[in-house]
Length: 258
Image (tube, rainbow, N blue to C red; front, side):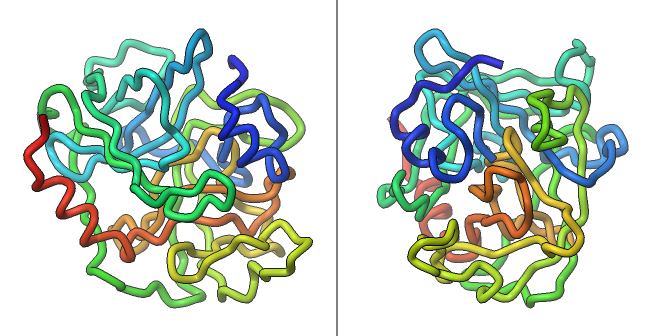
């Protein structure tokens, strides 16, 4: 895995994830049933000579939603993938024509960590490639709700091996207070209006490096986007709260693009 030299990313993840490693694999999880999550997208991100990767999810035939920090010079989106090292017949590879990060994304605080990718051509929807529903505006996920997160990221904080196959884990939504805004703690930039605190510290299950941009799925709806967390991969991790951004998502997808 090539190192990320994007200064914004290194700054942004420096205190949480060591720089030079792709940010935000599934820890404590298992291999997903192949193609059980047909909305999942694998993003190969080129920045200069470096290649990194993120997750994402299909929200319309020509738009994928991901994290704003998953930006790059060029992004290739793989849909319908299970094993990203194999040439599966189910896969559709489409270049992102435009990267549209939220205009108020802040790389220092990770606030508004959300980005739409407009695909060069429409995805062909079939049993391997499907959209996932988005929540209602300002919809709240109750603490205690068990949700699911999936990705191709790292499986342990102890090694840098990422997974060829899609992995998943069940995680529980926590109270905002479980990500305390202690000025010297890792959650000092936590913002309850735009972020969700997810993962029980007792259970040790979490998303991790390489899962960034993937969806937090609660009752079949994409409620969160993997954003950031501790460098050891210990929960809770922080997810972008999708319901806050529904008006922006709708407006951006409707706006005629050059």
